[in-house]
Length: 158
Picture (cartoon, rainbow, N blue to C red):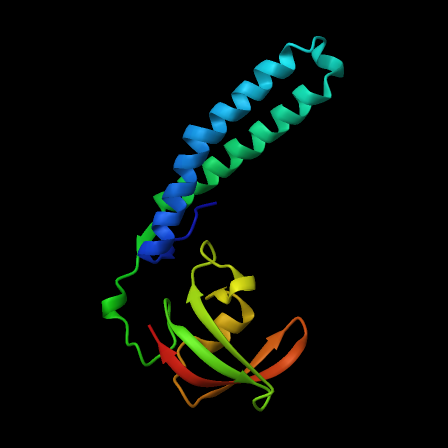
């Protein structure tokens, strides 16, 4: 299965590159040392430290492969070409939810950059997808895992 293009901001691209570098230079070395130490404990068939280190090594190598694939298919977004009045990739959107009961601000990013707990949501998430293409003043119905809500866009910035 071919991986689709991954659109990233400059900040998001840098974050992925830094994580990959950390895994390749620091984490690989740390796990190799753990494996060497665990080997010294004797019989590998009953060595839980060795098994745990090998499992951690597998997770690190899987993440390295994921990051390399993402970076291979990454396209840097040129934010200067995007209409800043319309919710799009890179937009910062302030909304009121369900008639103003709640006010939230979101930054719309790629799935690889998302951090929902900090208001950084993916353009593929239910809220992100629903807000895309709208402008300040629009009321958008959003179906979330908690039910259906009306998000009124109060501001769109970069």
